[in-house]
Amino acid sequence: MTSMPRSARTADRVDGARIRTLVLRACRDLELRVPKARLEPRDDSLTFDPIEWVAPNVGAVQAAVELSLREDLVLEPHRFKIRTGLLDPFEVVHIDLNEQVAEKLRCVEQRSKVPDAYDLHLLWQRRGDFTILGLVPEKLTSAKDHRAGTLAGLDRRRPRWDDARGTEIPVDAPPADEVFEACREAIARWVP
Image (cartoon, rainbow, N blue to C red; front, side, top):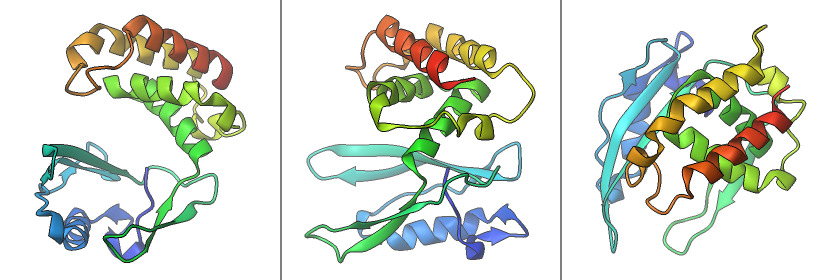
């Protein structure tokens, strides 16, 4: 999830053409190819997929950017200054890492993308860094049984784990049993 400046919104909707223009302008030296935004079923999110470029010593690279304005942030976003020898220092704004973990749990419940399980597994490995228990109820706000829903979301991904290797998840991702057991532990601890 990301926060969009008012100039990139149109009547509380995301302005895909404006965002695409901003991305292309910011990355013009990369010879980035960014497709037109695809409006998701709800008019409060956009997906740019695939974004493509050629990286030196790597070759062709593809990425996707998903922007969502479905709800407000719970915690204040952070500013981080990027310093590199190749560019003038610049600042990025990102959501608090604790809120990102709570968002990932919501993703596991509400959608079926295999990489969500991989991401949750990675986050669980760093669980000592996060204090999210108070955030999860603010992200999962319906009256549903979110623990059961999140476990069901996890189960939807399991059959596609091996097929996703090398495309949606890294080739060297851990075995499915290890990843899905870590995810179950995370859900048991973090989802009320």
